[in-house]
Image (tube, rainbow, N blue to C red; front, side):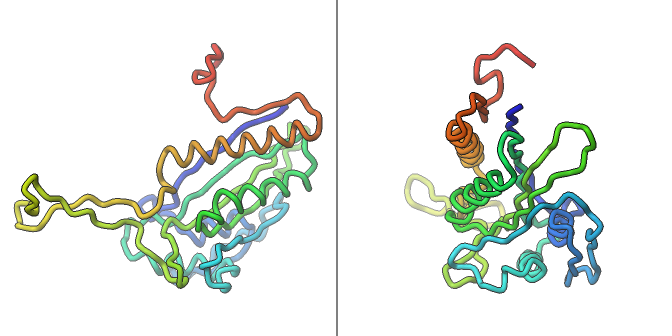
Length: 230
């Protein structure tokens, strides 16, 4: 049965999370954290079909190494409650062969994430569920901090200073000019997530049509589709 699932959360220190540990778990690897001085070892994890790191043109080649990449991300974030990475999770289709699923997953990650300047560390999982319906899915970790064109880490936000109707700076109680913190990318916007979810549904539906299958998936909720169903 065709299935649609596409969600995103954040890996963040405020929740006691580590980018190294998250990457090690998803890839089933043993990675060393330079900040915490310890290994995260998930080499016993099973059901991992494929892993890979896709880089935009601005990224240093050394970031193809998972341990180097995520240590660099951790080092770039100094705040004790820093947001480190976006964690995407989306389902593959049992109606497609694993090779077909891998092909469209790689194409989606390249077009939607990497071509937008994101580094994408992905892992395809197929857990052993015995006689239950198979649940192939993809995990993708993307650093939240963007890259500059020279391969260095850029700013997540820029300051947009505030002025009154006379063009004079608006000051706070301490005499400092007020400002709004404006994100430097659109990656965290709800509209962007909506476009990613829609793009994945459309890609799956094109594959269903190519295989002459009647199934379709929809990224919208039942309520938004005017379907009276829980």
